Every structure is written in structure tokens, then in C-alpha cells.
Image (cartoon, rainbow, N blue to C red; front, side):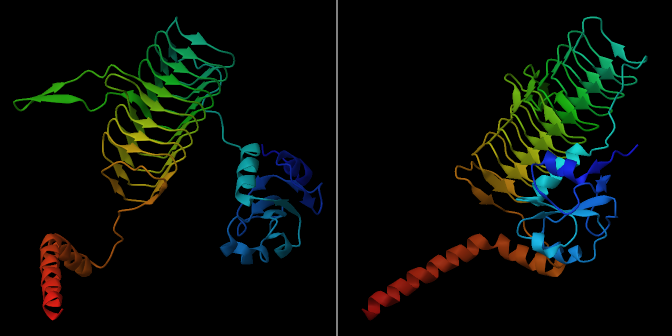
Amino acid sequence: MTKQYTLGQLAAHIDAPVVGDSDYVIDKIATLSKAGPTEIAFLANKKYRSQLEQTNAGAVIVSQEDAAHFSGNKIVVKNAYIAYAHLAQMMDTTPVSASNIHSSAVIHGSVQQGDNVSIGANAVIEAGAILGDNVQIGPGCFVGCNTKVGNNTKLWANVTVYHDVVIGDNCLFQSGAVIGSDGFGYANAAGKWIKIPQVGSVNIGSGVEVGANTVIDRGALDDTIIHDNVILDNLIQIAHNVEIGAGTAIAAATVIAGSSTIGKQCQIAGLVGINGHIDICDGVIITGMTMITKAITEPGVYSSGIPHSANKEWRRNIAHFRNLSEFKQRLKSLETLTEHLQNIDD
């Protein structure tokens, strides 16, 4: 059943003023273009300001700068997008991943459970695991031996967490995430691959979110470490002994090779590749499809992805790219000749 709120209640939650009817009833958040009379919309991008005139929303969240452009009910805030995020949490209707403890769940007798733990159908919790208060373990999940899951952490269906992993409080794992699988460690002896046991683990801080089908490998000797408030999108590969600093965000399909360190408050776009054994400092932004092959020691924006072009043009440009060394040598020869001619004239 949809819960209803007055505008006054919503405004009080984000400590912002209402301009209009504080008793107006709202039951959902929607976009400006789709909102109806019982819904609240938000304007976070000026390019959509013209939609304020046509919206059917019962109320709108607007910045102080945009407030004058809407005459209806509104909540006026400093940052409309952040306000929207807080209200979306307040009005969230996402169901729990598990309710109570299903009779088909397999839970070892040594497992320690906090208060109000829920475990879904066919989940397996192995010996020595510790589950904090209000933990939700979805259907089909696996939690390995001696793994610790902190308070209020939620695993959606079919999440796999290997042995000895440590997960903090208030974390969220989407379906298909795999935490603590073996890192890619092998030695080559005359063409034969010899597996190196991965005896480290994974240590995940609090407030971390991990997307669907993202994989975080366990360390070879020391742990792979994900610090507090890191957010990881879907289909990310984090190799053994990587360390990711607090507050860093990484988008889908990015790959981080082993033993690399990512600083705090970094933003890494999708399809980025980061070589192993390199350090990236705090406050770095990496744009999509960038390949990082050496350390980054200064905050800033870094790119290397090549935008698309017509195939004929791309092939011509690649041909030029392959001849860069030749072009460089020819340019150097021309510079030498020019310098020689200038000396003659002098």
C-alpha cells in the first residue's frame, strides 16, 4: 500500500520551507514530464526548466534560483538533486530481500545472529559466520565460513560471499555479486601454470554499495580493501589486493588489476581499465573508456578514450597513428635543417 505524506512532512524531513499548501498530500516522486496531481517532481537541471510550465505535479522541489519559475506548491532548497535523494529514501517502496527465516535456509549451528535477522529461501550460511542486527540475506545467497556481515546490511538474491570476508554496517549488495573469489594468481613453470592459493580476504567498510554481477577478489596474502561509502556499479572486476579509498564511485564494466590503490573521493566512469601495481591519488576523475597505465599523482580529470567516427575516417586516423614514430623523426629532421639554414643566414 502506498504511503501518503503532506508537503509539510516532506519539507520537515529535509529542513526546507514550503511555499504553498503544507497540508497538500503526496504519495510518490516522479519526473516533471510524468508527474500527476498526487506526486512531487524535482528540477535539478536547468535544461528542463521549461517543463515547469507544463507539469501536472502536485508540488515541485526547486532550488532557490529556480523557485520564481514555478507558481504552484513547492519546496525550496539549496540543491534540488540532493533533496530529491533524501526524499526518495524517505518514500522508498523497495521490498525487503528476505522476511523472517525461511524453512529451506541452511544455517550452521555455530552461526551468530543479531536481532531481527532475515534469511531467504535456499540460502546457505556456513559455520562461524556472524550476522549483525537487521541483516537481510536474500534467497539463494551463500555466506561462507567465518564471514562477518554488519548491522543493517542487505544482500539481494544469489549473492555469494566467500569465507573470512568482513562486511561493515549499512551495506547493499545487488544480485549476482561475488565477494572473496580467488584472485588471478599463477606462476608459470616452463609453460605449466601453477596456482597460487589466495589466502588473504576481502575487508569491506560501512555504507558500501556493490552492483549486480560485480566481483571483488580476495587478496593473495593481504586483504583486498574497500573503504567506507564506496559505490560500485554493475559488472565491475576488482582484482586481488586492490584498495579503494572512502567515498570513491566507480561505474559499470570498469576493470582494476591487482595490487592497485585508488584514493579517496575519486570518480571513475564506465569501461575504464586500470593496470596493476599503480597508485591513483585522492580526488581523481577518470572519464569513460580511459586506460590507466601509470600512477596518477595529481587530482584532476584524466581521459584517453577515443570518440567514435565513421569507419573510413577511423581507419585513416589509425594509419596515421601507426606512423607517429616516422612522423616524429621527419619533424625532428626538418627542425634540424631549419636550424641549420637559420645559422647560415646569420
